Image (cartoon, rainbow, N blue to C red; front, top):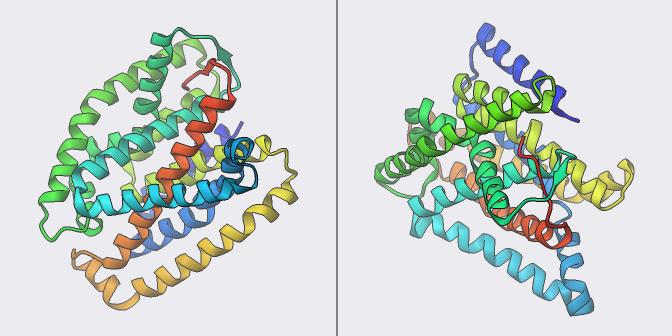
Length: 316
């Protein structure tokens, strides 16, 4: 299990910031974007394999004609939602992402049981609550920082959109965080020595004390994406070498994309960040990543619901 590594990463990150202080915003933006692109994006690098598995039986060799347009359309619609309805789109993205994070944790727990429909629904609520701690905790503990980041990302001239998003997220968090605490306590009481049960605690700690971009990058790259990569390699029965070879093209493309974004962030874009103004390049990076994420997480939840039995794994 990867939990000891993640707990160590959280400890080292918090200790480093305690002794050295948090890095500047420009360095944080570039470092977070690079980490997410290189370590995060590749865990969706074989989504077309998942699409082929789901569609090939019905559509034969034409599965790709259904999969790729649908996949791209979902991402495009969501990206446009940031412009047309930013508050609804961003809060919905937070909820879907939290659910996906929690479901990945459940599927990686290696323990299963049969649940009634009510109990299965409770597991989905637990997934949103616990899986979204990296979002919900900063909304409550670091609202001004979240508002400033959203001001730079959300395509709106007024700061009102960022304020509305933070207010709505805080309302959601005020309900889900107490639920998450209850789930975490129950999990620790059941098995206090299991290190994976302490992962949400570490996530809460780094979400409180570290800047949002750092805490999210540590969680997304150091925990969630790693679980996704492990699951993907296991499901496709690939050796490490085979897996790297198949995922490498997307990884290289991601690195090149981030290199271009990093070049764009030089000069005027960096100046606008430092002055608290909206950066168009920052918008493109984060809105683009979210547009990629939404079809990915919906695809894998669909795959889970079809391929897996009615059993639902533990949440923590």
